[in-house]
Length: 588
Image 1 (cartoon, rainbow, N blue to C red):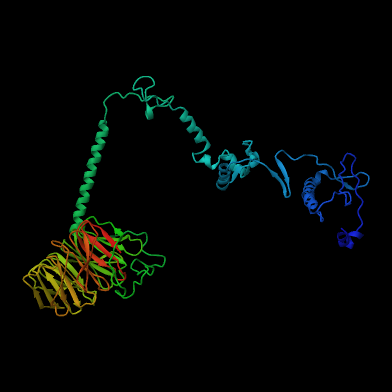
Image 2: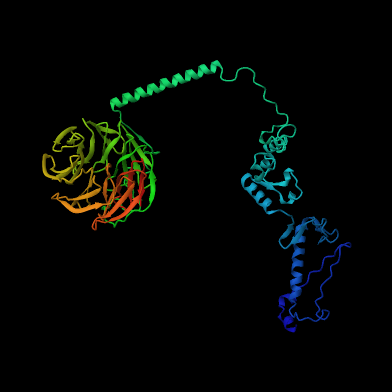
């Protein structure tokens, strides 16, 4: 204790103590704490920390109480002019407790009510005052926030408004009270019989009994007959207009998107850069694999698919022709939607073909007409009437102004788009020409129903090589290997024959294991040339190893014959298939 007394500062010793202000006579005199250590009982608390902890909340509470009531309880003595402290004129309300930071009001509210009021305040701007909540008061001052909104809504909470407003809820409750009893299910007829959902309502007026004939009146019958007659006239008018359009060869296209241009003013012709692969690179630069799963299905054609073509080089657009007389352009890499439908043929589509840049394409139909279309605008640029069906279409590899078509009248016609004239005819086949395939810009081969393959020099109507064999069958599909050294032909005896692209000599290799009898199933190669693929009549897509010649996989793809398919040039294992069921599918 002597050490604590010596530790006391000089300023505390020298500071004079202010005289205590006299208290009123009716004021209670507080008991002063003795500073003497002799009166206190002996304790181990040498530094009196317990006493300090006990006096701290009392002092703080007294300070808060004096501050909170200072304006009302501080009075000036009449004689001395000094401020004196008086007792508080009003006690704290019931349920209010004094704390260090002020007062705390006790109330009870369930978690649901709290969240309900919180949600109401967030959505409507008002909530029930917690102080008035227990009293269930609906006075205007019992709400906090937007009191005008609370008055307009009748103080309804969000939980109550889920069933409508207060008026509609009251009307609903009143209507439920008017509902008659369902009755007893054990009673069939008579009083108390079971009515179930057919029970009526109190005060409901019974439906008056209909007297007279039941059915439409003569006026209604006359109106119905007039309407039916008008519909028949409109239908006949549409049929006449359709016949006139077919006679004139009216062509049009329908754009299915919301806008022709994106935010940068580009159309769907722009090669996308966000496809996850470089669509401007060299095809076949990656190792390819056999697809396993269907990841997308294009629907829109109503009849068999007769041909599919991918946009040159990039493959970001898909062109399909169908027996429903329509040609459709599809998106491949983004949403997979139909971008445009081309209408103009009056019979099924036989073949479609992009030019070398993809800006235009040709379509050939069983209506014996070949049409030239603009890929971007959908306009029909030219129309070439034939005397027969154009079975196949192919552009010259170095020119977008010249194309060849093999026809059903045993000829190959060469057209010049600039002059709109036939510039050459190749007439050596003895049957309908099925395929025309360029091996290089100066040479091409053709196959026919005469069960032969013939080689030609471009623009010279003389056969340079005649390939035929007593056991050879007609080949409705021929494809060139990516290395341009081999030709693969789909033979009608359920095998794929291989020919040298330079000498046209038949190789000893033959790929078997699929059934294509009666169907012109297209042949395809993976971009790297590792796999040979073909559809079959059972709805499968069959894969062979090109080097080993063995069948690798038979993938079920469609319910009907797979007539055509195409490998995406910049993907490792993506293939588009088209079948007689009218569906297009993307596999990976």
